[in-house]
Image 1 (cartoon, rainbow, N blue to C red):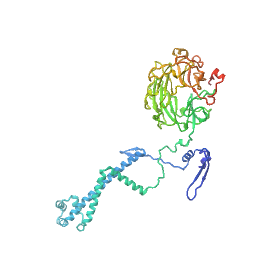
Image 2: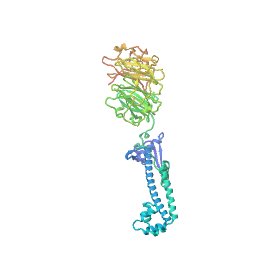
Image 3: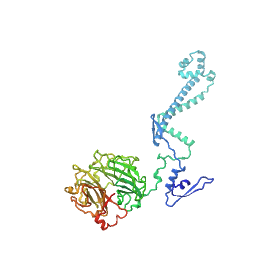
Image 4: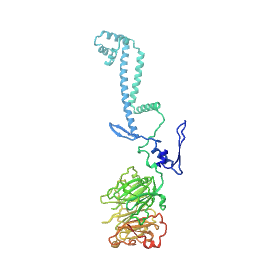
Length: 554
């Protein structure tokens, strides 16, 4: 233990004292302030002989075939085996008792006619057995048993002794038959024999039966604390202490600002716990699940680690959503929308599996992609927006819950060459829908203008599509509040950042205003809400209002 502390393999121990004496072994370990004792104990279990674990392969023959069984299953198979053993043993004992009783019955007949039996034996040369069988109604076995006895011994048989033995055998025969006829009594025999073994050999349990986890679970070696996990536009992920991003609450989502010296920006920020799961949904309809502590901790300015180091992504597969999960409850749902207008609602419990490889989250058609995933409590309104300027709003109750690998139902009926670009959930109606076009036009629209409709319809206009030649089609939509900030990036790597309340508010079918200047041949490729940990709550400067922090990436 001391070596582990000196070598910094175990942190948090301030002193170790050996207080062993004649009465037994005693080791006192003093911990540093604010150290989690359970974490230290589990680290000692892992790195020392304080706890030893050995594994067992629960292999048994089931109907003649070797199978690996769970603990309860192997106990069931043991009981089945014991039933077979006790049944065979009882049948053997019954046959033995009946055979002996049969012989004793013949001897009792011989005793009742001892003088005549002796006379028949003495007067016969080689047919005594047949004569005894005919004269006294004996079986061949009974006659042979009488003949196998010397005459002196036959004359000296004690009737009472034979009768007592016969009576005892008849009681045993009745008992054996009752066991074979009554399974409950058979199980009682097994119980009695196990109890006898326990009383004879049993002592206090010195081990614990635990699931095979390959040793101490790594989670028990990690302090549970709130952390911020960030995922960048180019697919780099890292974990930092939660207090780095004070603007978010636990379970919140957003993105943090970009520095001008980097060609990447953080597009997802998740405040969660080191012991919580992170679910990564990809455009191919798969979901990957890892613990937050599995993501390496890094400094706030560090680039992070490529997310493909943690997820077994296929060529061209990309992450479209990251959902933090503490528990997989039945009353929480995941709502997914695809590019071709399919929506699916699945209970969170459907994803409660230990598999680390990708699972099917939604079954997609060959030309479809999963574009958005959100977590819901079951009381949300769903807003779906398409690139041709259509939108549909309906309550999530219109989407029935279905299994993990199901394909979903129709969310919106799309026109030719149209596709879904965004899906948002809202339960308050107090935010606004912000839409953005390829040529840098955008607007905010009150949610009051989006009436609830029936799922699967064509929806209503959310943009003046007659202006597409000037503005370009929609690249996305998001729900914003007045204090939110938006970051846009074009295909040449130019980024601007602007407050949502700096974007004009107008009706559903209007064009909106120019947000970002886009050169010929260029277009907006992505935009999202921004969370800035340093100055999100500060007012923009005059210069920021003038140029909206336009930057060119290197």
